[in-house]
Image 1: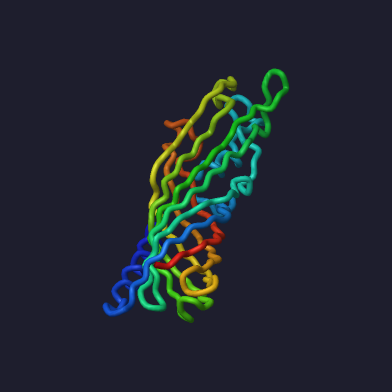
Image 2: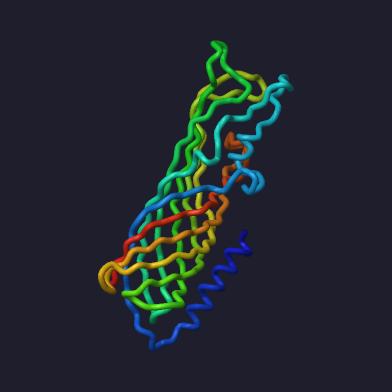
Length: 247
């Protein structure tokens, strides 16, 4: 993953170096929202806590029972919001620095185990991400006030908070207990993107439709922090609708 992030960083640096010193500079702000869709189970990072929770392992002393939880990774699809400050250099390059926010709480229960009353043992899995990215966009055609397709790449960091809270089964004693476990941190990130800008009645205002792929993996601390996996895969796709104002 770090090699891909370094490669994205080299793209950004290369485009900066290629920028003519005499190119016109125009600033803009952009804000909007969209959809965040996490990576599927089959493609998640090794040691990912969500994949570990879903797969489960046999409980100690009960080989026919597992600690697998019932949920779907698609349940973590959620809306996101973002804001970005950009600098356009000439007609074909735009550099942006932005921040976003997405959060989702997903209910789950144990697949094989119920409590003494025959009720499901339920808990909630909650993921919050705050991506902070620096990107460069290459707009090969047109200019302000025209339709402009573009591609781009960037680097950044993802501030994350992952928690599990509710009722759990002790894998050694099979006792049922209530608790909350939380992991927070900041993970390096790489991003690739593509989209198109549409003018809104001139060259000051525009709307963008953009797809992004974010790649980042954080740490949970593993078993010492009561998580069954030592990683949390923060990667996923985003489809955003943005509104930009140039000044």
